[in-house]
Image (tube, rainbow, N blue to C red; front, side, top):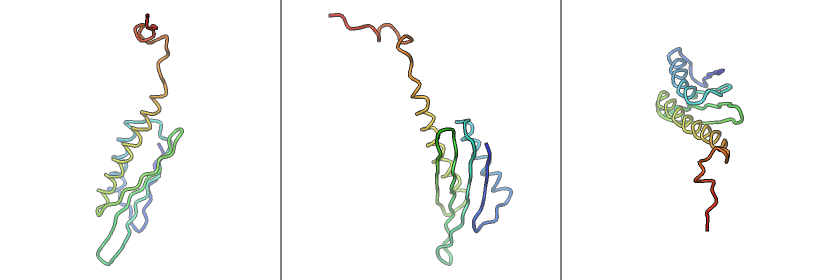
Length: 118
């Protein structure tokens, strides 16, 4: 998985990079067909004392692109929320992929395939 981390109005420090990388390992553990991920960390200054931290990710997988955004007052909390949302979407996509591979009729038990006798 190619990982790109960028920051807007924010200096990316090695601990922040390591934290994002460690959190995204959870996604890789659940679904291995990820092509690349682009993470954008942003600090929005709304008022003099009010700051809003935003984390966004665009995850390219085989067959689908997923975009998730999370906003919090703390950057680490925004990253945690981002990974939670992303994990739910990836697991949902994985379930859809696995659901399309139905069992063939010849492999079902005979009790289910037998026609009801009258």
